Image (cartoon, rainbow, N blue to C red; front, side, top):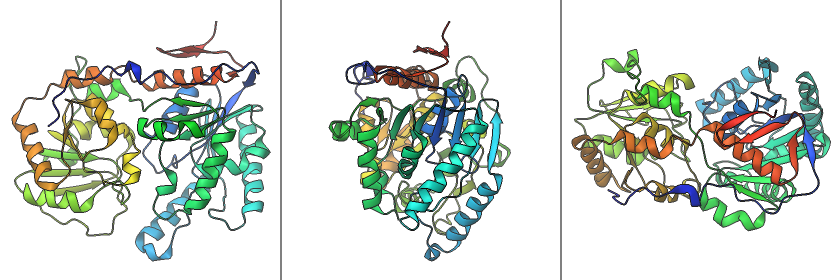
Amino acid sequence: MQSAAVKNESALEPSEVRSVSSDVRTFDGVICFGGEDWWYHNRGHYDMQMMRELSEHVPVLYVNSIGMRVPRVGEGRMFVRRVLRKLWSLRRGFVRVRERFGVFSPVATPGRCGAVVGRRLLALQVKWASKRMGIKRPLVWVACPPGEQALEFLRPAGVVYQRTDRFEEYTGVDAERIRDFDKRLKTRADVTLFCSKELFDAEANTCARVAYIDHGVDYARFAKAGGGEGAGGAECPDDVQSLARPRVGFVGGIDSHTFDPALFTDVARQASELQFVLVGACSLPAGWCDLPNVALLGKRRYDEVPAYMAACDVLIMPWNQNDWIRACNPVKLKEYLAVGRSVVSTPFPELVRYEGLVRVASEAEGFVRAIMQALEQRNDAERGRARVCEHTWANKCAMALESLHQAGVVAASGVRRNCQGIGIGR
């Protein structure tokens, strides 16, 4: 267990940008090439949350992920599932979710096939959808590297590259192709945003202009669910009420590049007296875990997630030990702390900033020991909440706007940069 005092994060938090640009350009809306699909992925992701905040004041077009890899028939049922859900998303086309927030699913050609025709077709579709949102001079926010292909056709007022992960390490991608996109985006972007200090330190010198702004959290939503901020706590979900206690929970995507199934099943087998609860979409092969003390509840809506976390006594992050995880900074950690439950995780670099708040173990026996300690010892929920309460998505969005301002890119509507939130300038 880590036991050092909580570190002051102020030395790490301010967006780190280079000198202010004298060439001021204005944007009247945002086009975001998202890293996920709005219709079937968890909406807690960095790009989705940032767009939610920006759409309070300027029009935003969220372009559902155009993909970094081509689904393979050899994936079996997962191949069928991926194809069907993408087709379902494509059928929706353009949808105005709110007055200033539109979601668009373009027809795209993942991989190298049809690259020349594909990028022009992509740009034409996105231009059409952006006009529906009234966007003429867009800030283009790229969270999915292949979105780089459309930049020359969209003529953006500014470009943000969201480098939140080592995309080239993702299973099944054309790593060389993604590296090419990454290199061009780092050179082209007015600001490259990093949310992982490990990744920022390794790559900042390869970018034209950089900002380190880590994940935010819907603090009020998660703290309320866990009984913080004077709230009574969320009602236990129906499918959890009948499960025995103590409950050890994981809430999030159960995918091979992040989640360690071998470690988890070993832990659950050794701690057979505990009830394990897994909530989230799973891309692992069917039958990967059939232990009687493990409940696989599947995916739940984002607004239901806090209640599932709060229904557990300990929350865990059994990550793989790979390059992807070493460069990550999971938003889940801030959500776990805001809910106010004890946290046990495998090690990754970002945890150095949460010393004393997370129990860490790299192998099954140590992981089980850490869970047992967490159950036996009283958790100081308010200490964890104090560590993340100011990390709201509104504050993170304000920091991104300030970084863009430093780069000479500002909203035509006069979005006020304010670290307590963002609003229209008066």
